[in-house]
Image 1 (cartoon, rainbow over the protein chains, first blue to last red):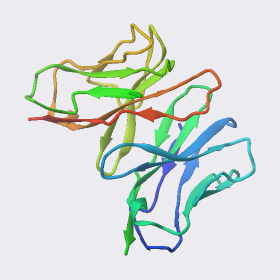
Image 2: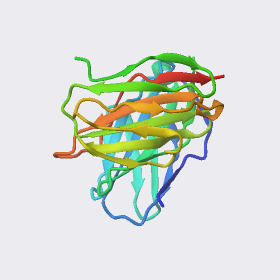
Image 3: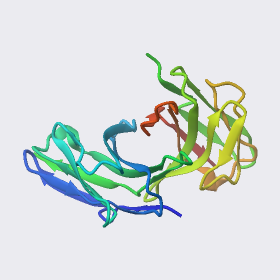
Length: 114
Length: 114
C-alpha cells in the first residue's frame, strides 16, 4: 500500500527567509502525481504545486518549488522569500493515476515569524 | 463560481443519530470523494466515486455510506453516529478526462458527536 510521510510536525521560518518542508512516499507504481496542498486557518484546501512522476524537471510556481527525487521517493517543498500569508498547514499528497486514490501525509504546520 | 459546495458547515449530533453531509459540484467532474481530517492524522479517504452509479471504499469507510445518482451530487451518510466520527469532513472533486490529479475541495463540515 502507498504511504506518505511528513516527519516535521511543525516548522518556523523568518519572514523573507527560505524554508524546506520534507515529504517521503512509498509506492510500487510508476505513474503517479505528487502534490503540496496548503490549508490556512480558514480551513480551505489550496493546491500549491503539482509534480508528475514521469517528469524529471522539478515543478515551480512563483516562490514555491519542489525537489523531486524519484529514486529516493522524496518530494520536498521549498518556499522562498517567506511571507506572513504562507503560515498554514501544508500537506503532501500522492495520487495514483490508475485507481484515482489519494493519500495524504499528516501535515506540517508552518509558522512565519515577523 | 460555486465549485464544490458542502452543507452543513457545522453540525452537532447525539450518539446514535443519523445525518447526511451534502456535497455538490458544478464543474461536471466525474471524480468525487470524501475525506475526514483529524488532528495529527492528515486527511483520510472515506469513499470515492469515479462516476454516477459507481462508488468505492477508501481507507476508513466503516460507519459511512455513499451513493452517486448524479454527476453533481455525492452525499455522505452516517447511519448511527458515534463519538469517533467527530471530525472535519471534506468533499473534493476532480475531472477524469485529461486527469491532472488536482482536487477541488469544499470548505469542510465540522461534525461533533456527543
